[in-house]
Image (cartoon, rainbow, N blue to C red; front, side, top):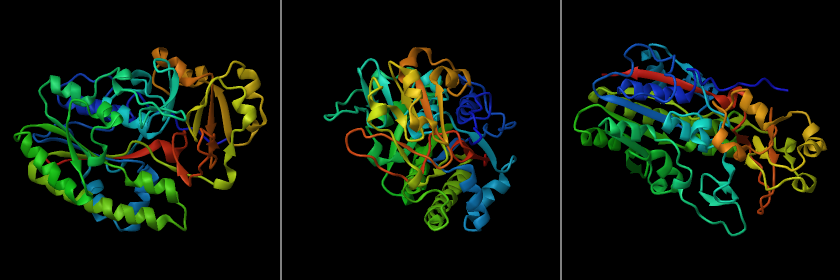
Length: 394
């Protein structure tokens, strides 16, 4: 079995990064601050700009630096007092969970978002937590208010009178998931990457020149890594080319921060690992027959709810190499969720099947199974470690 990289909720996780943001504005955070941010790094007069590049893993960041193609990222690392550092993501290291953690400074056990799919007792169905619909032949929508249990970072800042802005894709505005994680902020939608630095400057102007918090989200490394894999030798050029564009964006954002005195932080919600499609495992009818409902989670970490967990665990598919099967209680006790998950325990099911190495676990939810070349949600280093670079320009 591969080595597991557990979340470091005590001070080395993405949760602690935004806890430090709150602390820098004089707001009590719900979790410990980040141990990698020293002194007055976040206390500049202009506030903080946080750039989140979805699925930009630590190793991918290092590869981009070594390529010599990212001069702005290189300069940022050289200016940072701590250089290039790493944080862990959360478990599962998937977008719905990790972005919720970043935007609330809360662990999965605290905010209750535990997977891309999860069983919601109040709905009585397996639900897709990105689309906020049930996983049924005729999907039914439900409100994000049903699962909102903790305030966002922006909600907390608003109480303290600190303006905040979420700069993200315009097509996400108004969606349930976006509304959940951006509550309390002014949403500013971009239509193209070239617009981001302009919208940042406009948002700083809208804040009236005082200290504010500006969160920028860029999704494309995640999209491309799913399609091509994050580091496959024959397609690496695709992700490196995307890093060229990210570097240009970082350069423009740096210029805005230098003019206006913000601290710039670059990080990610999670990384991504390469998968081997020929090593995919499809859970068949023998598994489905023992399940109360279709699995929660995703292809790297599945939540299995069964009336006979012992019989389920004995099935051949779960004896395969690079598949780790453990009880949900064991995962909670290992600290993977940052708490006991007590209010949300039913969302985890009885057993968790963790795909390791280049495995992926597939289940037909009604539209067939779909292979991917890159994925995340597991506990490998590539999925769990993300970059941290912080430079105060104030």
